[in-house]
Amino acid sequence: MSDANAIIRTENLHKRFGTNHVLRGIDLSFPEGTTTVILGGSGTGKSVLMKHLIGLLKPDQGRVLVDGENICDLDGTDLTRLRAKFGMVFQSAALFDSMNVLDNVAFPVREHRKDLSEPQIGDLVKEKLALFGLEGIEDKYPADLSGGMRKRVGLARAIIMDPKIVLYDEPTTGLDPITTDYVDESIIRAKEKLKVTSVVISHDIASAFKVADAVAFLFGGQVVAYGSPDEIRRSEHEAVRKFLGTWLRKN
Ligand SMILES: Nc1ncnc2c1ncn2[C@@H]1O[C@H](COP(=O)(O)OP(=O)(O)OP(=O)(O)O)[C@@H](O)[C@H]1O
Ligand SMILES: [Mg+2]
Image (cartoon, rainbow, N blue to C red; front, side, top):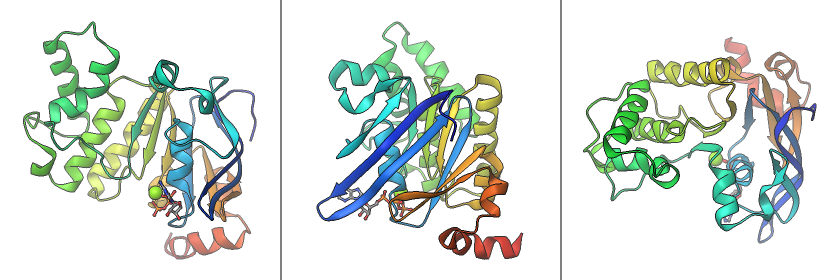
């Protein structure tokens, strides 16, 4: 876990909800321009960890450095400024139900780019939707869309500002294999072309190993294994072996 070129770093992160001690000392570095995949069983704190990276949750102990700034200390306009470096795909698509697709995807742009005209915003939205195979749905509302389409609208919104860092919480859950490939390819392309740093939570191990430079395996509130996909495949840790077991036997 080399720290030298980390764009995000967590230090001894602890988070409790009541008596539920979810994060128990997470030290992780996310090097600039790389993709880190977070693996772990359901309820191990993957989403909670990701929300700390963007300052949506504050830790009970420890800190999160983004470009050297402790995001846990920021609020108001300082937090908004730092967050502009991020795009986030939420586990549930988390679209605004009362807004159509255009307004949902345009939301970050309207927040941060007051200089753009409506036609410019419209073109930008169209371009990002097309990346995920969506066309002509700008006037539709989330309730009119299938789960997979909502997910893809969420993906388009996450990258609309061409952020330096993109956090993906289960980006391919509920998507068909072709769209899953689209998403994987877009993560890889963003890294290669734009040096984007990605953090991906995934249950899809094949797709995780395809996009990952590094994998962090969460268990019992801690990172119990960290390394390249090959290193994780060879991990001796019991929880990792169990998690990968079925999949490894098939591949
Ligand atoms: N806002 C909250 N208030 C109280 N408890 C919470 C909150 N958010 C998460 N938790 C608890 O923290 C634990 C970890 O939740 P988290 O959503 O991070 O799991 P996860 O690893 O993302 O699981 P999954 O793979 O099912 O998405 C769970 O026990 C959950 O109930
Ligand atoms: Mg989750």
